[in-house]
Length: 403
Image (cartoon, rainbow, N blue to C red; front, side):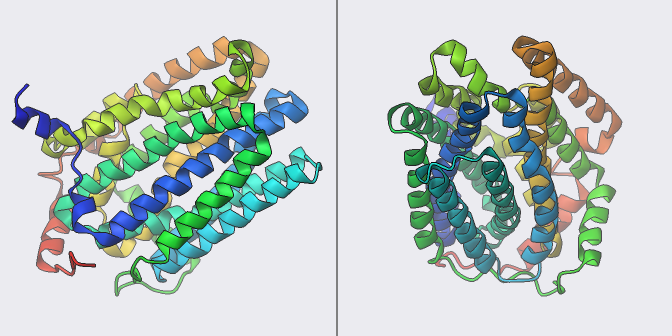
């Protein structure tokens, strides 16, 4: 392999080089996400230790779903109306308070599974405000031509945290206990907030209006009118719903050796995605993103191209609201997927739950790709929305590389 070939394969980090704000958001995200993923492992493990019930563990995903939908949709409207930096800081601080409450629940000896579920719901609500604001900020602080780099780096950030967080969390659960995992999560929030305080104000586009139900409906209507976007949502949602196995991992870990193996189980899935991200340089030369998503969904590697369709074709004044719908597509699926996995395991066993989920994922991906031709045939070079946005961004350059 030549040097040119290697350069084309390895990840493009130009977005980090050109934007100070993106560097801060990226760094804060890596640190905070690692801590959050440790908590993500600790909560179901704690509930499993208290109840030893598939259904109680699966309930974590169930209680997170409704707050994520409600606050996610409203969070998108807020991101289109207010300073996104303030929304990021407020929601991150609120999430830190939830982590502190989880820590107090353990240290006090109360250990209530109901309280854990309640706090999981609050966690989801804060995430519903945080993610649309962050996702909508990225195109503001990164030039259009560097968005593929930003998308790959955001995927890298998530996958790194998804690997390191559970692995560290599993080892900490085995060696130091649940309270230590929650304590470290609180510390990561503190560091993240210090970094996020340094980013510039992220004022939304001038066309934004005050938050209202009408604004939510406007975003949903736009998403439904774009069959190419709709395909990314439905393929992602179905893949996560049918094949998300995290609720089963605490029970699989019992068969593999206990708590220390739990982190490695959680890290196994994002490890493959990390390999895809680190070798994502070639994605800059791919234009048929829809087709790649459809094929990758069968193997769970659709993150990079899914983000490219979103970032390269959604107008700025709708970006917050569409970011909230995007978040729901990749977040609600896993929450409901935990419930599905738990129910299938409860009535059919672990093996049945895992195998049937994989088969149903492939079937659903083929079905939605066949149903939504605009999605499967999406090409960034010919798609009218992507072309219009590119022309608009090139004519209205407001990016300062020194920020």
